Length: 108
Image 1: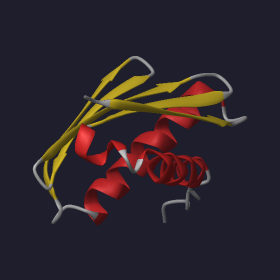
Image 2: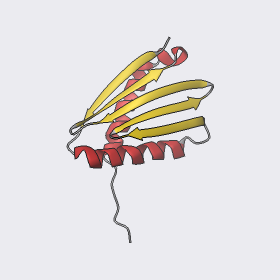
Image 3: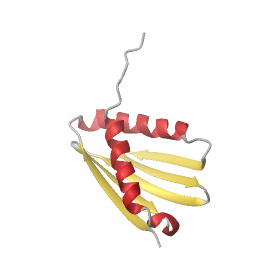
């Protein structure tokens, strides 16, 4: 049985900027954990990202809705990881807030 964890993070960036920063943050995480991830896929449909991640023999899916003034992140944890739901929720909130604060350096 899966457990759903929901996190909402407020922002004042507007949809376009927030979506771009979320996409960049996801790519940074994928790059940082490439050795631990067996498979990952991200499908953007408008301002919603559907994610699938397979690591350590477990499949996790998630949905990120980028809205005008907030992100809504819902992660579906497999039963074996569901006991860590509170910790996962804290990590998600911190990661989302960090992604929204990504500094953009001008290109030389």
